[in-house]
Image (cartoon, rainbow, N blue to C red; front, top):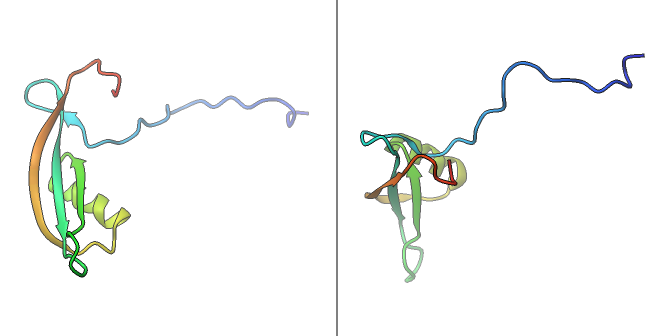
Length: 90
C-alpha cells in the first residue's frame, strides 16, 4: 500500500517572509519608516504606531489589517533604513 509511504513534495520552494525591505539605489536593501499618529482619547498622549515598509501604500495596508480601529491623524516619514547584504536578518 502507498498510504504508509512518506510523501515527497516537489515543485515550488517555500516563500520567504515578506518584509518592508527592498533593493535600493545604493545596492543595500532599504525600507522607509513611517510614523502614524492617531487621535488622543481623553487627556493622554495620542497613540503612535511605527511601520517599516517599501512605500506608504504598503504601510497603510499593514496598519489597516493589524490596527483597524486606529484613526489616523498624521503620517510622517521618519527615516530610511538601510541593511547591507549578508546581514543576519536577510
